Image (cartoon, rainbow, N blue to C red):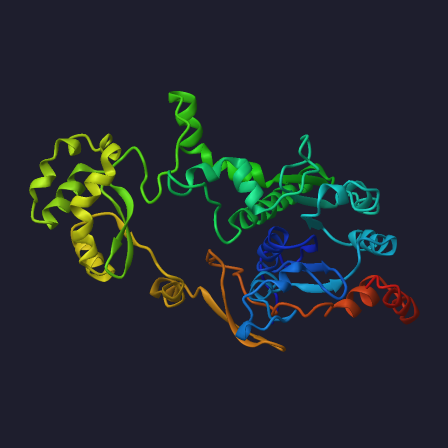
Length: 403
């Protein structure tokens, strides 16, 4: 397939491991950038060890996470812990536009993998570094994960039930958010490079990315009212009802912030006597008694399916959303109409389906150009064509375990 995405002339090296850098690289590759993923020899990126796997049989080429995050990329094996591997990476960086990385600070600040070394032969190089805590902080050398970032950001204090421990955002959401912001920072730096006529280095702190989630209500609530916030479970505190409630076949989120919506909601339940309860006179204060108030109307919700509630709430203009299950997402009419799912044929896995892009363009669209690469699939192209190594040099690298 011809590559005609908006980033088709962008050359990228992806170095690091696991989700954040892989997702950043994927976002760029999906738009046509040539993304060369540098992986460890033999084992590859740890993504390849994470399932799900077909029939639950682990296989380095069949990880669902790998197949999704590495679509459209090229794979090259190179041991960056060796001097030979580092020298080859520096040589490769001389011929690319961007390096995107989530290497630990201890790796990126040594003499071979920092921005200064990688840009030595390429003063127009842009680098986007995704870290947990950032660069100019006393925590810069701390190890961390998506769980670390979620907890350190304060976001966990708003997730879960008030009588239980805080929770993290599932599915490594902080890693994916770090990847999104890593890609955004890279594109902004590339644009600024054209103006300044010089290379640039961007640093992303995943803790700060997650902490920005608190900017909408958590921080102003503390600044203006001294409120620290709490975990509200299935409710949203401060207004009633704004919550996830059980139906007979799952869950539904209900919001009746406007009084007219509340009146229509009460009317659906035939205007029960409890609607005159004085605790509902000011619904901005009603949350204080939510356990008792829930008992009035939750049974009515539980007596209906989500599709029945969908019809009732739609007809009466009451804000709501069924909480979808994974199998329902896969079969979603909305996603089908948006052509969200894409079939890919892989030489090892066969045919499989992956999510598409969360956007649509009128021109230069997102596309699947190639399936996720097999480990080291593009070694010959990289070392011989791009770096100009001969057969003897290649053989020596393999013997030394560098590639």
